[in-house]
Image (tube, rainbow, N blue to C red):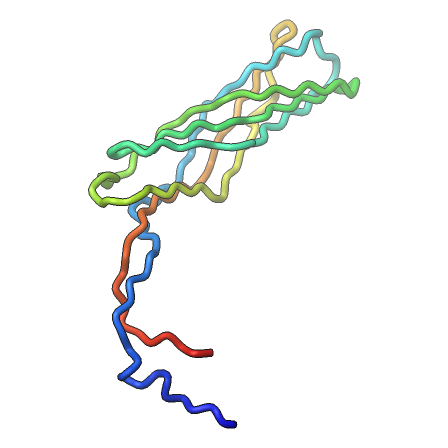
Length: 156
């Protein structure tokens, strides 16, 4: 039994509608000057290590802006192995140079290459620790669109 390759003959080509994403906004974002204060309970002794870890984010797309809310976990470890962890929120807004509502369809927001960097040493005032950090990421906003393609569907 042989295989004949007439599948891709012009007779088998038809118009097909394919759903895909069209990128309408792509921005490299850097938000400096972020700050969070963590109550420690006691005055820490010795060196302190602080980390900021993103747990999740939500995004709301408006006409020309994307409003982001980050859920962050701030962890602090002291020289005496005392660990403190706190969940906090951080908000920012990114301006896209394109009207994001000009195309119909659902907005798809993606962030990649997300980086949270602690800047400098944590600042201790009494029993509170203040951490300064920077958020870097690439923001992509896309819309679902239908694309008409003339092609043949292969058998195998």
